[in-house]
Length: 441
Image (tube, rainbow, N blue to C red; front, top):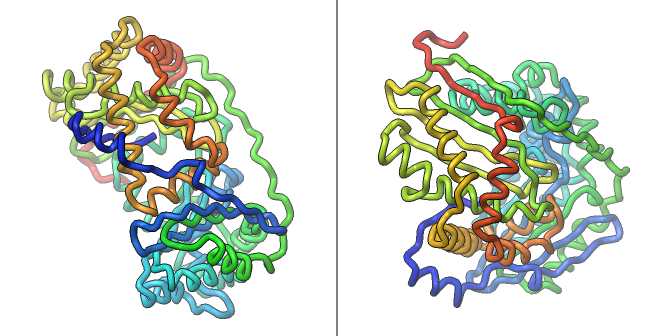
């Protein structure tokens, strides 16, 4: 769920005693008549405000043959409205001393800017404008399609580990939309029409399918009035269709071999796992730290430091998702090492953690790493807003406060139990990248 940082015990104790990360008790929620939810968290330690608009739509809401629509629409949202010229949004924010960007994931699409308190009204007006008035002009449609295709080539087609992850994801999920890449399949991107974007925009970009997250140096009454003035005149939209697809249980290991020009072999193991709505999410998060949370973790110490058969190794679990997610182990091999041998070594270490209890010291160290990372991740108002936004998308922002208490309650027996239950070879997909010398066609 979080990237981990090793901290000396004294520094960790200091943070634990004095840091005050965002928590649900400090967030204030308001809902406008048109359905727009507003989540506000005042933080006056620096004179800046982060304003984010989260749309409850991502790659999971697309249909087969239309992959990449949510991401394509994100790009086109910067192509102007009747009152804002194409690409002028970013220039206006920068001119007023702010920083802005946007991203699309499987679950959400998010637009955000960080500005001074006295300028944040500019961002509020711009976001309200393009929520309902985006032109999605025909002039920019084909050129932007080429930009996205090039983005896909750079980030996926020409990136061996990303290419392997994409193929493995398409095999790990047979019916659930998480099998589709967020950027879209190349043929789907090529065949998307401007009308596809217009229909998608009208269906999903409405106040009742969005929420606003604001953190930083502001007065709740003052900024709420600005948000109401800008957004409450936007009419409620039709209720978007719900995604009700459930992935059937996997009943046998699946394997993917990708032969591609690359420097080194790469291994990926993906196990189906629950999201944060399951009480097991805390133990799974700690398990990922025990396995690969730093140089002294089990996988790294054994395979990178001791045996030197892997160049890098990682274990990752991110439970903050709308639907059940996965637990992954990835490794980049050293030159000349056989993937089959490294896979056996990884499996042996995973079997050991299923059969033997980890030490109390290992458990406490993992807890300290997670708790310190949790605090550091919220050191900025942007980090606080992101945490609120992700939790709201996945299960509701009030669940934030359960995280650290859940981590602290995990026992050594819990770690062994979730390892046995979820690191099951019959529930996993294994992907292996075999380097080739010839150029990909």
